Amino acid sequence: MTDTPDVAQLLANAQALADNPNAEVAEVEAMVVETISAFEARLQHNFARGPFFVKLRNKLAAEGHSELAQTVYTYYLAANVLKHGGGKSLRELEKIEPAPFTLQDEESKALIDVTADGFLGGLVRALNDAARLLT
Image (cartoon, rainbow, N blue to C red; front, side, top):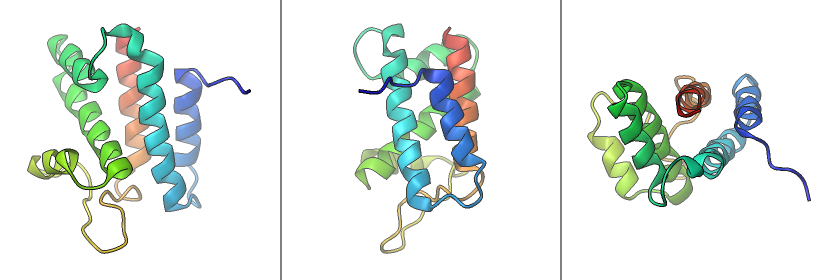
């Protein structure tokens, strides 16, 4: 059995992939989902049981970090869309103006374009900032 990475290593791994111009789309999508899931697992202890990213958003906003709170939450929604497809998370993202990410609706493509706008690097920056404020 291998050790699971701590938050710093988890985010460093994601950043390394974000910095790789030859990364495959499927690889980036998998890293987004893995990073969001593992981030939640590593930091869940900061909150009572319940929806981690909702509680994180509320805590960050209450401490005066409203923009970061919304950014982290929108990345969580995007990861949910990548993981589960269309549904509540996609509907929430579609209501945000301007759109925080490039949304796609073409056949056989993911609903979130993880290759546009430095998506994975932005996720890493937001989670790094959130983790630093939590600890």
